[in-house]
Image 1 (cartoon, rainbow, N blue to C red):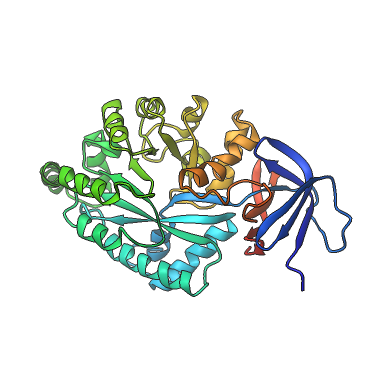
Image 2 (image 1 turned 180 degrees about the vertical axis):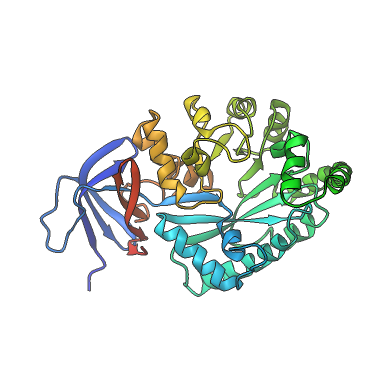
Length: 378
């Protein structure tokens, strides 16, 4: 039985343009890219639908949402991981970095259990061949947390680790640069105002004691290694300059225009959130991703917390004036390049046959089929 698949009558989104053509898949790879239609028996006619590379998602918290589908309703870990995998696959994501938090600042202690279970299940389900998408590991390291470093030392040599991000969710910096917004958020979550004030003082002191030594140890663990480092929620040029000087090459979700401009000046890759683009703004009051895109300050789009937002975000970028190949590259070629995954992210002979068939209905891309290494997964 032949392992060859022919996809024809497709609008191929290539690195430098869109062309009507045909792909031949063989041995899990793209064997041929040709213009025009194929008359070969068994060729699958895509009816003029778009065909793009499989989506590469560098950051999703979606596993956490499956583990806790409702407050106080914790789902069995393996079932949650499989549900997460299915949602990722039907969204056209063929390579996904599961972003797991190391270190608790009092937001949700159960996230540490989710991280430990997630690392365990990632390894076991991958080894069993049970996952539709290829799952890799992204460790999100909360620098001021007293329990971050022991967890990092457990996982820093994990064979599926592909990205590490440095985070700081202390009120007064990063995402919580405005302390009043932090206060309002915690009170809406049910905390008493006096409790919030006490906790803010504690967290500021904890940051002063732990952030710097944890940062130095993290950087030492990854010095000279081929694991991309990112910083989360950069907030000013001074912070960005320090990160660049430490060899950090990715700015993930800068919270304002000034930080994004500084990241660009330092030659860093900039990640924006797909939900920010789809919703038309940040849910947390940070800079609009569309505004960043208008200034050429979006290199990579990540799903953050909604896998299905990836394709729609790329189409939003195209609607905003970005050429479609460049918009698609923000969710395919650019993240693959940032992760050092040279075998995917583009429709070219010799690369992995990770592909998504879709058509736009009223401006919204709808997935028709997904292939990973030439095998249909959705």
